[in-house]
Length: 194
Image 1 (tube, rainbow, N blue to C red):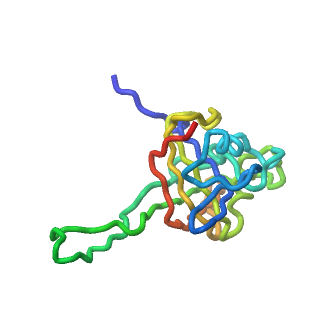
Image 2 (cartoon, helix red, strand yellow):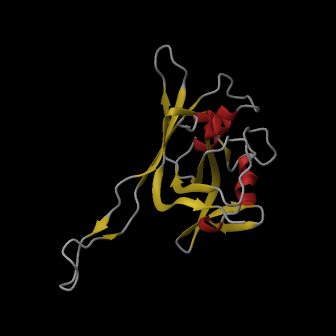
Image 3 (cartoon, rainbow, N blue to C red):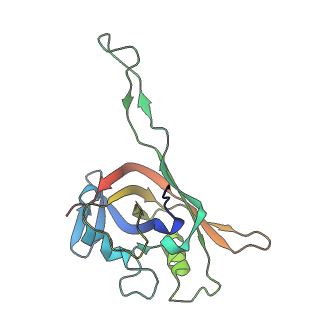
């Protein structure tokens, strides 16, 4: 028998970000935390925010349940390479210079744009303007309402929002597509610190 992960085993959390000395940091009530030093408690601060009504909503949150499973891309793509070499290096030597990745997310719109209990409105609120920096934390294998814990593997993508695109098709639900601007900092299969 083969076990497969279900769609509902993905979590996508937006953490507000700030770049300091060329390195992205999450903005938390306790201060700035480097993206490669995030703890489970740091991520859980925003993972419990799933509606605009939450006391800490506004800067980040858990948008997992707003995202369209078929309109969701968070992954590495071909990296930039530098193939300049010295006379002493092997013929096929290349150095990776920049990691490229796609962060293209589509989420549903709420029928009531003023509903404060809607994850769809949280999605809209977090992506409505361009140039907003986020760390997107993606976890596979746990439902979105399961707390993050030390030892779990996550992917972290540093992005800025771009202009959202309204998606309207006859007979279909309305959506908002947000193709994020990749800023070059990414951690793949990063283990959460204790």
